[in-house]
Length: 156
Image (tube, rainbow, N blue to C red; front, side, top):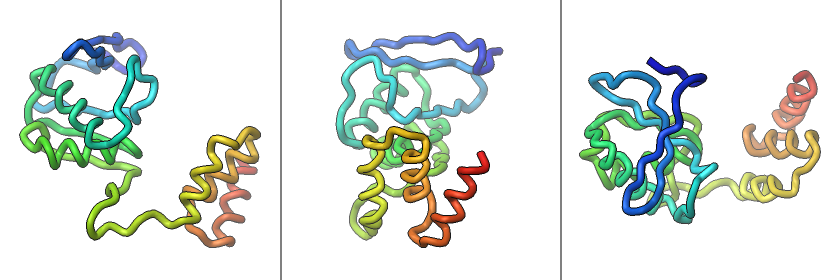
């Protein structure tokens, strides 16, 4: 049995592309596949969620894992939803945390002020600037909550 501290890095090549993963223990009846947020990739990755989802499906099929649990957070939550919609035979249960629906028919787009704050992420250098961006993105748009969020960051 492995835990996060001693799980080996494994690589599976599918259609010539490497997929890095870890196995955290002996295979159970149902496997939980945890999608990372598509960072630290070893190769080029697609730039849209649908292609990411197709890559994930190819990887899951190559592992010969069928109808198991898929866990996605943040951006990988978008991808997990599309895997579930487009490849339902691969997913027994979808688990989402800290994510949202992707934009589509009937889905209200993100608040413009949050999109503005997301654009500031790349230019944030100091801890204070990063904290201000976090407060604007993670909390509601009210000034009162932003003030409380900044006070919370100061206590950290």
